[in-house]
Image (cartoon, rainbow, N blue to C red; front, side, top):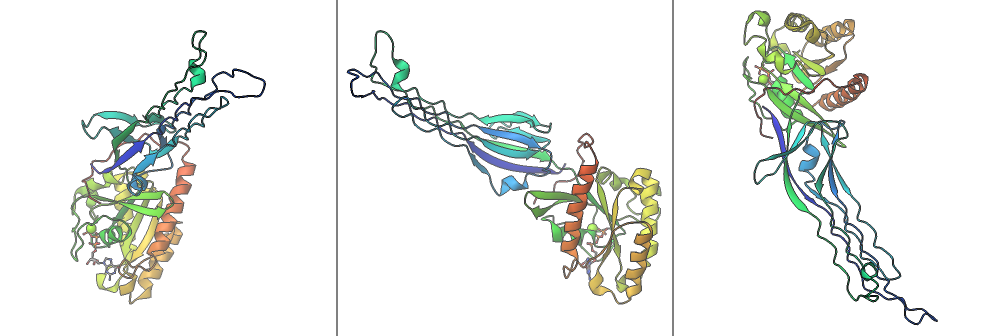
Length: 352
Ligand SMILES: Nc1nc2c(ncn2[C@@H]2O[C@H](COP(=O)(O)OP(=O)(O)OP(=O)(O)O)[C@@H](O)[C@H]2O)c(=O)[nH]1
Ligand SMILES: [Mg+2]
């Protein structure tokens, strides 16, 4: 199971103190008590936000403090309340008490709010304590302390994007370029034996999750090579990146490779065969015969699929690809009126 984990500290605001004050006015011989109450300290809330899909933003920013309440003032003026602090988390975030490992809440519905730390109450000013028998109380109350906690947040990651292609196509090399995932890379087929996930950070809280799976070969649906069983790890992705090696060293026919993989995807499930797919020609730094690239570009065009050419070694085309993936995911998310129910993949843990 691939799990994103982060520890955060939340601190609600302290309440402001009440104050002791008396009215002093000309022609009012004995002014009454006029000390105002302190303001309430702000709360810290966790809010489930469906535009987030990882906890990465909290890793950079683990401390969350709400504003403190202001002290009361004379003339019956209350102190201002402290502002609340809102911590946005992706849907499916589970919150644990790190000392006991108890699950405190599961934030699974968009917009769901959970009070993580309650702000201190404002202290009463002396005006509050005036009674018929004590008309001039000389005491006030201190503000209450804001709550302060540490929480462990966990999210079972779902891949948004799946990398598919022949063994050696450069899938693992690409994921290691665009994320912190470090799968094994080598110049022989079936280097990758288990799926890996990587989180791609586009900045501005925009991220997407990529799954790198073992390569497919002709007959994978009949169990050839490592078979097609790993395709279940990309079954619920929104977009496939279909990597095709166009380097001359591969000695392969790029259009042929493209068609074989698409037949295998279709044989696994018609739905996966018609999943949105970007075609990515890889290893362009080692391309001697431009026909390999152009033939593939034309073939992708005939299927109305976007085409990209990259080299993970030189970095050429990689940024343009990740940006295009980000925009396409935004578009696909908007189109799918409501996300399908969340399910977790049984994917090995990659420590980022
Ligand atoms: N010249 C060049 N070589 C590359 C590039 N990307 C990957 N390679 C090489 O291609 C070989 C295979 O790369 P991998 O990333 O392991 O390929 P894979 O698709 O993950 O392969 P499997 O895990 O076996 O399915 C390695 O020797 C890489 O160094 C590239 O952009 N340019
Ligand atoms: Mg690999």
